[in-house]
Length: 306
Ligand code: PMV
Image (cartoon, rainbow, N blue to C red):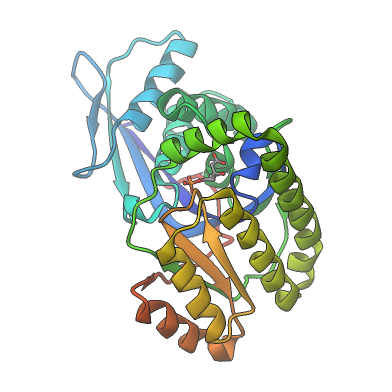
């Protein structure tokens, strides 16, 4: 084999962010914007990397180095090239997608038999090595794809067969710093465990209720539950003025409900809206300075392309 290329999707957290880091359930969907990782033979004495300008190389390096140490393989003889179809700043989980694609590409390159579950565990280890914390939900979306109910302990990765949601996605223009938000929340958990656990239990109840509603296509109720989830995220302190403005604008224009998606304080918000209101909701988000991002969701997980 001269080369192998694997791609993996970015993700959107639909429900349950933050609470998922403390053992509660969450729902994540894979999107059509993908990261590609190619491994090819090289004469270099070490592993070399080619990344798009500005892409954080710590994730791909951690995935390669940890895998090769585990397999007792020398760190040499190939080049890893990555490319990304979406801006890292949108918060769609490009780092985890890179890690997911890299661990699968290495499996192919070395002709190993690891399952997706093995790859998932390895990906989570590499991500935590770089960023310290994290539930692994991004890696679950990158490797398993589609839409999954996820819990960290187990881990539980439960595929949900759903028809596409009438989703609108708006980027706030501000990049979220996930590791520092997670550290801040960890300090809050130490200082006020009862309060934070109460918020997380309430979010967990929302996630349990929304699962069948998503499957049935009861989007009006899904929207209401998004609103409830957002209230708890606001209470946790991870929303922002800009996200609130975008969420309020979307709802005023006719969305059934809206919430932030991911770590918060920036990145993106999501809304569910009747098809005939989509355009108005998009315009409303843009009128307060958001950028509408048209994506498909519920897409395939990591896979070999060539
Ligand atoms: O990667 P982000 O910033 O979209 O955040 C993912 C969701 C969190 O629950 C905030 C973190 C995690 O690891 O689960």
